[in-house]
Image 1 (cartoon, rainbow, N blue to C red):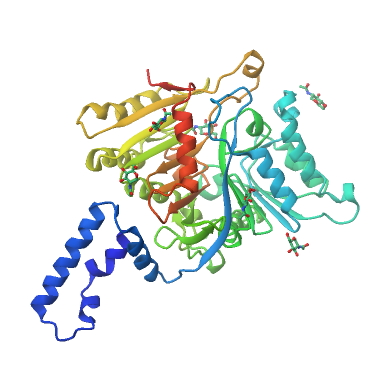
Image 2 (cartoon, protein in one colour):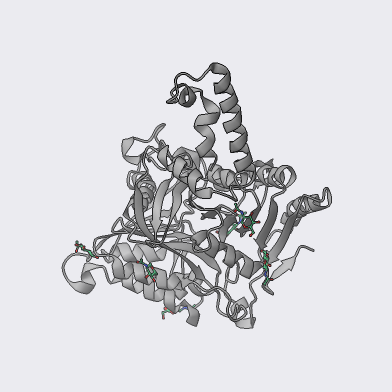
Length: 479
Ligand SMILES: *[C@@H]1O[C@H](CO)[C@@H](O)[C@H](O)[C@H]1NC(C)=O
Ligand SMILES: *[C@@H]1O[C@H](CO)[C@@H](O)[C@H](O)[C@H]1NC(C)=O
Ligand SMILES: *[C@@H]1O[C@H](CO)[C@@H](O)[C@H](O)[C@H]1NC(C)=O
Ligand SMILES: *[C@@H]1O[C@H](CO)[C@@H](O)[C@H](O)[C@H]1NC(C)=O
Ligand SMILES: *[C@@H]1O[C@H](CO)[C@@H](O)[C@H](O)[C@H]1NC(C)=O
Ligand SMILES: *[C@@H]1O[C@H](CO)[C@@H](O)[C@H](O)[C@H]1NC(C)=O
């Protein structure tokens, strides 16, 4: 929206070239002042009136105003036994989305992943709810020549984080040994002295993708609450994400590979927070979109850093910021010594204090949560008392577990990582602590409404998901 005003604010050029060359200098100034104040009025009014002309103007100033088709939907894993009230918003499951992608693919499948435990036995625990995970695994395995005779049906490439004794990644060993997939491991100790590949991304035929919080883990389909997006027939945005995968593949497939000081042209993107891609979503409405990447050394020229995507989304909110992340710390958690990392915390505080933006944060709680997190959360929520305009509310989301479910290791948690504001939907793969933006590889997707307060949009869907969870019996006040 503010883009529309930029030419007027920045330079005299537009006015100097005004058709009426006889206009006197004083009049030019008066006109400038008039235009400026009109613009400010429109801006302050939140474009409540005449949003159309403003939008059209901003489109005119784009270098690339091409619209690209993309069918996007939100997909979720809702843990077994977590029940919402009837008529609550419901979306396609992650399991269905992955099956859909496997159905669609006829040429390539690239998976960017952290670790692999798709089979019950990988977790030392054969639970009946591992079945969907095993089904997906078996479909990947069936790509191997031994099963179908001849060459693999499609070309599967997997980039995973370097396996360790605690996570040996047996699944990918099996897939590789059956010729079903090519697998590379990324060792971030070599590239950055530490960190992991934490991305969860599927790219099919360079045309369809999944991006979200779900690991390649059977529990991510039935026992852990996940949120992501499925995009179908979305070649331009998918090709852009493929450039991030390409960097992972480069690092993983050469033993001597190091992060280049500058990524070459092949990895460069034209789409970022300054110049998003315009998507024609489901042939129904348009949205602005771009993918962000972390950590910064992995970003090729043009790529918005994941942290900047988050800060920009918070900073551009006018009314509300709703955040749902598993862990939130204004700290570098895994450093050698405790380090304060206030980038996101500061953005939240200024949004609430300076702009009266209403902030809600839904943070997870499970048996492995560190109780120290409560202090950082409470210090944010406490600001609500400071001034009547300031409103920061925080709740903890607890996934219920019965006796049987409690025995599942590292299950039963809300693993979502997203944010929704009055203008933006941000879907990510990272917890919100410094580590995820300094040495951990992750990806974010920013989708912005082109028409404010659009009801038929992904952003609105995400808002409904947040409201459903926030108002559910599983959301608890901070104690
Ligand atoms: C969006 O809707 C809300 C509630 O209906 C309204 O208060 C607000 O002004 C609207 N914002 C814009 C940018 O139109
Ligand atoms: C894959 O399927 C698409 C239609 O979904 C088709 O246009 C394309 O030619 C197919 N490619 C191959 C390699 O079979
Ligand atoms: C789980 O099932 C697999 C295959 O059926 C079996 O090999 C394994 O021993 C089982 N593991 C446990 C812990 O029961
Ligand atoms: C988009 O995808 C959804 C979910 O798969 C499907 O129901 C819908 O028909 C698709 N829309 C278009 C325009 O392709
Ligand atoms: C962040 O998320 C991962 C899972 O994605 C979880 O295992 C981990 O403990 C979380 N917390 C931190 C501080 O990294
Ligand atoms: C649910 O939560 C939202 C805030 O996230 C609130 O605005 C809305 O009124 C609530 N809805 C119900 C039905 O309680």
